[in-house]
Length: 449
Image (tube, rainbow, N blue to C red; front, side):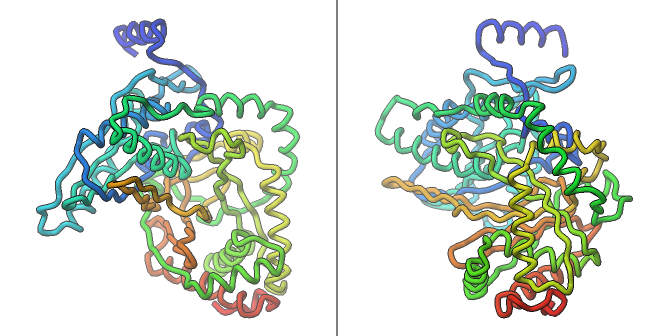
């Protein structure tokens, strides 16, 4: 750091313009246990928000300013440190908002996709910040799209819902000509991080480590160990498919009858399909957990979520119903013994290698919270998730509940799996789910794929 920048940092600290905080335990994963550098654009969370209503640039900027004032992560960047970087939280920050007009484009869909890809792949300056971008795209009268990009170090999927709700509330305040801001959060992100650090004392981590050493002992990596950083760089490709409402209802009914959850049911079917697709009976997947058990953090933006590795053995002679019950109990134990992922990697003595996750190659997630919709007179917003996958794994299956149907997004590296191969996996997954729903006591080997 230059002497001039050091002097400015000292002035800011003394005046209270910035506040330094340690990394949260969730953030440490990106610096200590990730397959890719923290500054890689694959760490961007990308989404868009449909906006209906008569908007002006002033309305947009004023609304976003209120959200920035409330959510400290939108004023956060990272200061390099000797051992770890520090969170650098500014007391004040102007909103990062840009405007684009595509209303006169003769190819609006293509132009919008090109703009989104350009915005999504624009790197952030981790030191300078801000670590988000809000691009307002006009598509016609009273029809806008807010293309929102935010770095994973300051956000998770839950954060997007909090952002949408705050933005709508801030707009409503502005239309009332109110000069007041949004109410303060019950728990700021840095306060949440401090509470997490206070809980995860070495004794608490050490108590849970034996479970993980046993659970993951001898676990294989599903993809070739020769995968390198070059192969694992760049964005993941995506395929989207749907599970019909009839099949979704059938899967729910069988899950309830067997005393399991929809998550466990879908993951069991996924592991059976993945086992046949990859030719391995021993499957480890990573799954995200919200990590927001405290009520006070429900409205807080920030990277709070954790990752839990789940291991399962696919036994051809075991009935699916028995496999589901066994795996469901196994996974409940995993969630009960979960520890921060960076601490897990350290406890296992694994040195992360560039280009691959140190524990699992495959991610599985069920998003069962409906995308938020908010409306006030003359204005409405609807979040539309775009699963792009932060590229810390080689294959991902992300399922989102849309009413009675399930949307399944497959994320994959084209260097390792072709589109046709992933399509085959998707068909196998749906076939296993359909066979199970029709005959839950059938042996795993007999399930139609």
